[in-house]
Length: 248
Image 1 (tube, rainbow, N blue to C red):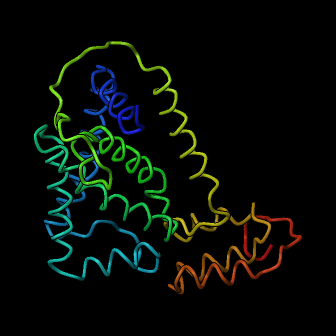
Image 2 (tube, rainbow, N blue to C red; image 1 turned 180 degrees about the vertical axis):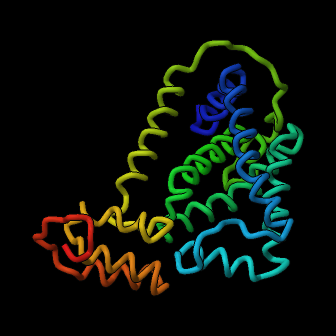
Image 3 (cartoon, rainbow, N blue to C red; image 1 turned 30 degrees about the horizontal axis):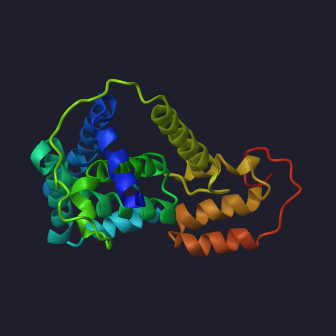
């Protein structure tokens, strides 16, 4: 039996499990809840955040806000994807539209080291990937593989198993744990959202004075994050007993 046939059989078993069906609904509703407010704000022509323009993410969001109808267009796509996810008949299309939007937000979050979505955006990407896998039987025909022409495109919905997927649930919690652990440790320095919150990390740094300079570079001078990081990374480690102020 081919790998694709085994994948089809496994996918069919998953779709027939009540707990997986409930989890797919949970993912759809959660993802929709994540985009409905942000999409509405954009359509209403309001700023999405109160972040200062000097902040790396603030730079981006302010420029995005200034683009006019492009800003509105993104809001329309977000709301459309969210609403489609809530409607069973259009949920697949909603997941397809949703994925590039949330993937872009995730990459943007990493690029700007934005703590506001450093945890939520990767979890939303994983939830979206689950929904795409959930509808594998619909999407597989756009993949560069040859499938038997007699295969049923959309299996009839049914519940064949109420068995609790212990291994899958354990995997979900493990994935959440890894995302949280990674989000807390992926960066040795972050701009955070304000100058005071940025400076609070400095006393525990091995480069406290360079850390304070980094925070000033971002929040006071409004320099690009890569430029501020380059200066910070080039600074030597300091043997300083941090007291919580840049003069310590």
